[in-house]
Length: 402
Ligand code: GCO
Ligand code: MG
Image 1: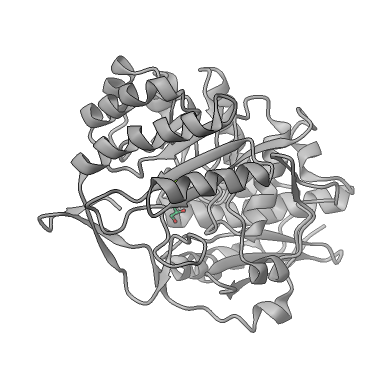
Image 2: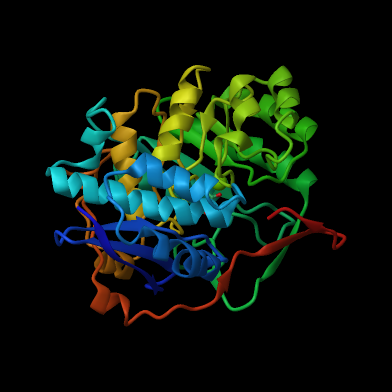
């Protein structure tokens, strides 16, 4: 089997997606996701201008060799653009392999290790009351694990809480919006939020919270301690993770489990986090960490250090990544949990898929390959719109982490 064609489809059914389609001489094709929120066209160009010409004529079964060719062969290694481009190719090749062998991708990754993939939903509200209502709604929908975020008194808008009636979406069309932030107000508020959630909904539901990179190590240590009575499943991204040893200080002070990694791109970005056991869950995901070929190695490395996976699964990861994450989560032994943020109805129509949610778990389905397709005609009716993630400043105007 040979690769005869490869092209990029950029579409925006509610938000932007970069999809790679690789076609073979036997008529089988594969899909890969290369979406990098707010920087989509950089990955599209990296692929179209630099990677795709090198793929023509290659054997799509050579996933390891092609991965190494794109990683080592570029000379310039790592980084989100490079790793998303490599991921798109890698996913498409595993999709082709599965289709050619007539089996779902999870069978190529070790086969089923569990019955279903535990997922967590997002609940949020402008204040604690609204957030409690939303937790209740998600429990009724069958979720067993729920991430809870709420607006903070004194802070006009905050990460993870929609400003309109529409579902929360992390990018906005047009130029970046700006928000203002107070760590002090946040640290006072979050323990009150979780006290109310536990009081109202009991011990059983798994609760998660995303700090979205906004704390220093000692602030995160304090929050972790304050949240201990409410037994969180995890506290996510307490710090920006460039300085891995920053997590050591959090660890010395609290037993609240820590998750990080959604902005990391290679094992080298998380090697100390994992080997020093400073985290409990690694959140790297297929699209931003080089696809199955690299993420499998990361997960296997993490398994040696009691670290489990908790792959990023926001709406800026296309249904192709979502499908891949479910195959991955079903197959590996040290799976922890998978984020699930449902896509818009338009996105689901553009990407017909065989995965589904039922009673707290998701299932990738048994279609050969990834079990996700793209309706190119429909996709062409949703042209690309430039969109950005917001920018965040402290109350005095200092530029801060969003
Ligand atoms: C999450 C994330 C997202 C990111 C978004 C950036 O945990 O789901 O933090 O909300 O902000 O994916 O593109
Ligand atoms: Mg996050």
